[in-house]
Image: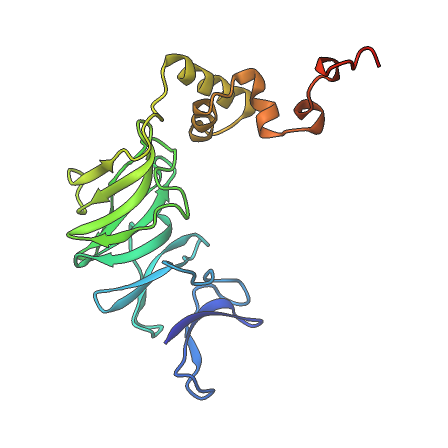
Amino acid sequence: TLLALPTIAHGTELWRTDGTVAGTSLAHEFAAGAADGMEPLGPRAAAVHGGLLHLAARDGAGELRLFATDGTSAGTSQVIGSGHAPADLVAAAGDLFYTASLPATGRELWRLAGGSAAMVAEAFGGPIDGIPTGVGQLTPLGSGVAYVAFDPIGGMELHASDGTAAGTGLVRDLLPGFDLDAPAALAAETIAQRQGLPDIIARVIAARGVTPDAAEGFLEPRLKTLMCDPSVLTDMDAA
């Protein structure tokens, strides 16, 4: 059994155990000394593919990358070209699917097949995350995966992929109406500029009918702004 365990001497690293003291040892140290070479292995943080466990760990520059291991230090290596901070790993249809990010694309769907890793397709386009961390829920389905992604037309919706760009896209618009009309799109752009927000957040706020002038109060509500004007209450002025 392989686990990510923290120790004073090694930080959080990959350990191997059979449940006994004698059978527990450090499998591989990604970062020398007490620095953490890994993050705790939460749900979907690792998956078995091709007989090897794949997980996120820090490379020589301290960046989280995709690694493959057979449980030994000699059998542990980085998957080249796997993107930054891989997450939501799942084995499906003989391949490994996961999400990862690049500065130019944000977090999107990736696939490891035949020892080669590459981004499958962009849901949103540009540096905005199409699959924000913790949202994707990649799930094996038929010849690929189903997952939740954000696109500029449908918003956060159900997508599916067979591992190819042509075979990747929206399954069904389950929550219609996110596509903004011209005034709302302009409001979203103004909100993003005034409040310093990512476009994705500004569009969600504008879709809720919040105007640029009301955005600050919406984002940082204060009791004074939430209370009604006392003068509108019956007999308040007379009192």
